[in-house]
Image 1 (cartoon, rainbow, N blue to C red):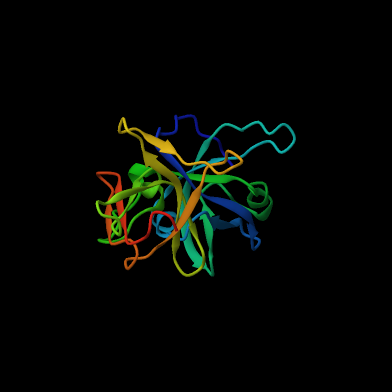
Image 2: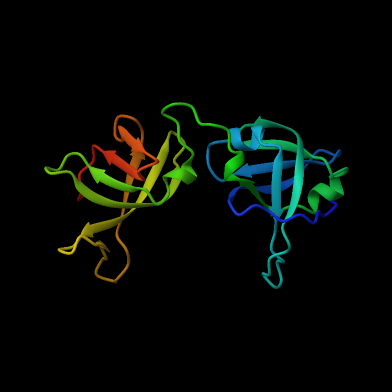
Amino acid sequence: MTQHSHNPPDDLVPVARIGDAYGVQGMIKVIPFAAQESVLLDVKQWWLMRSDMQSRALEPMRDAKLVRSRTQGANIVARLSDVADRDQAQALKGTTIYISRADFPVADEDEFYWIDLVSCLVYSRLEEPIALIGEVTEVSDNGAHGVLHIKRQVVDANGERQDLLNAKGKALETLIPFVKQTVPVVDIAARRIEADWPVDF
């Protein structure tokens, strides 16, 4: 693949990795990190970076133009402009795909990109007054829906957030199903999520 010299944008988000070559004409199999394939299908400008498996050093990031893509089960099959044969495609195995957040298509109403949920604060509407549950650190997919991974926190007497730890000093985590019935309020601009979920579940 030809390497290009212009600098990558500052808002790149890792969205997938290349699993292997697909077929004999230079196509690749792409494994998304989250169940929101529309970004990989709609955005034509990808950025690729992989690590040297022996030294673990990161290779320089390079850009790649998406020619076409389609879903195949839980994965995506894609063709990149500079990949002409199976050998070139196979050489990309293990490469991480990044896309600029600015290039993400506009999400539909009541739909959210998972990357935007990370670092939001989650509050329990079951408490009176409404109480902090914690901060979203990750969103995963259990096959049926998304799951919010929340680092448990409390607000101290000074109004500062403090992480809750277990007896071994590790951060406590709460998992909440990311479905409308459980999470009725999501305000990305305010970085705030309200859930019908108990604080100490």
